[in-house]
Image 1: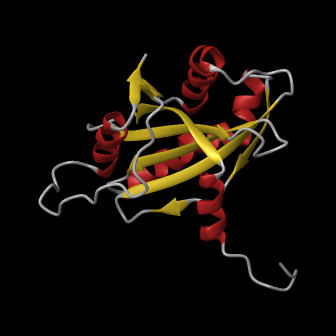
Image 2: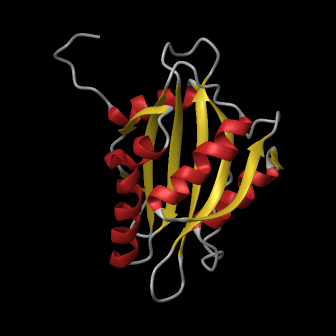
Amino acid sequence: MRDDQPIDIMQEFVDQYAREEMLAFFEFTVPRPAPPAIAGLCKISRAKSGGSRLKYLSLSFMVDTPDDDARRRVDEALGRMEEGGLHARLSQVVDVVPMPSLNAGAENHLRQADLLLDDTVVPDQFFIQERLIPMICAVTQVALGEIVWWGAQAPPATPPRRSLEAKDESLVGSLTKYLKSWGGAKK
C-alpha cells in the first residue's frame, strides 16, 4: 500500500478479528444510583498462533447504553483501565492500547483495548480468570457476571439478525445468548 492512500479503519478492524481467536467472554454491569444497572459483555481474544510477534490480549466491550448517563458512566469506567489503572495493579500488563470507539447505534457502545503483555506472561485460563478479570473489575469498578470459556466449535460467519419484534431484549442480551449457543463452555 502506498503511503498517500487513505486507510479504511473499519476494514483494519475486521482484518484484526480474522487474525485473532476468541478465548472467553464475560458479562458485567456498570452500577449507577438509580436502577437498572448498565449491562455489558466483554470478549477476550488473542492473536492466532504465528499471527503476531506481540504478546497481547484484545478486549472488546459491548455495552447497552440506553441514555446519556449510561454512556457517560461506561466511558468513565472503561477510561480508568486505559489511563494506567490496570498497569498499576497488574504489572504483567505493560500497556493498554485503546482503539477508536465505535457506536453500534444510540443504545449500544462498542469499545476495544489491546493489553500488551510482558514476555514472561502465559495468557492462559488461570491468568485471565484469576488475575486479569478481577483486576479489570477492580479498576473499572464494574460488577462481574458469568465467565464463559470458548469451546472448539466456531460460530457461523454471520450471526443471526435480531428480530424487530424482540425489542424487549437488549443487543448485549442477544449476543450473550448467541455466543453461549455456539461453543461457549461455562467454567
